[in-house]
Length: 77
Image (spheres, rainbow, N blue to C red):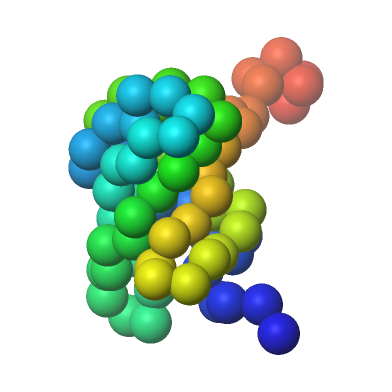
C-alpha cells in the first residue's frame, strides 16, 4: 500500500542543498497541510514546487522539482 502523499505536490519551506541533505516540504493533505522531511538527488531552493515520488519511515519523502503545465494560448486557436 502506498502512502496517500505520493503523487501530491508541495512547497519546500527549507532548501535541499544537494544529494544527502534534507529540507522540509509543506503538503496539502487530508483537508489541511502537513510538513514532511524532504530529500532529493539534486539541489532545490526554498519556495520551489515539488512532486512527492516516494515515502520512507519517519515522514521522509523523496521529491523532484515540479513545474505545472500552463495552457498554450496558441493551441486554443
